[in-house]
Image (cartoon, rainbow, N blue to C red; front, side, top):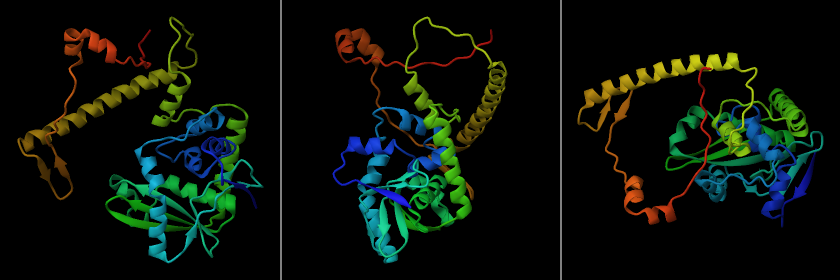
Length: 309
């Protein structure tokens, strides 16, 4: 069973506050470590940080704008009517689990998640496949609402429309609920950040927490010697692999010469002209120092370096 929280008339700020009161469908894949664009550390930051904003980029904007269109295409493809719910759902058994669903299927014990994908990610949907973090999102919604079926519709821009049907899975939902409960109690409630996982999302969170260093501050480094030795080994291995990669690329370039493309039965290689215009900032600074001063923008970041003692 679940509690229904009306969303009619709720402004964006209140909606963000509601999102911080529990784990949503888009958080599920990150908590399970299968979302390539997020991480458990980022979900922790979103749930414990004040004033956390929903991410805003072109892909997210496109997905929002085309949600109605994807729902209409689903109805055309299946004959199933769908409707907006205008509620957020909270599990009564597991109140840390919430769901803000895209659509409910009329006349069925089912829901619908609408996605928009780039043509570059079309291979992730081939042969009936579904990106794993989307699967976890849909099963999270089933766990919260109790609905036995969830459809996932995707518009792959410029290529195709496709949809999948996911059915209730006791074992999967039990495992997902357990993982979310452990994350909520052991990290969000306890106020303990989960460990990093090496993802770009973790880099972004760490930059948000520690954007700048205190001048001339230092701390004794303890407990990291073995890990830093392993890092040195990895840096050497990566360097060797990158050299091998570059050597292969250079061999192909020599073979291609002035040709723009080359193809075999297995691969298609392009080596095209790319024209770009960049401002000569050094020249502007020298010849127009006042203009450079007026329009120059100082940015601050932190550089991470490791050297042997």
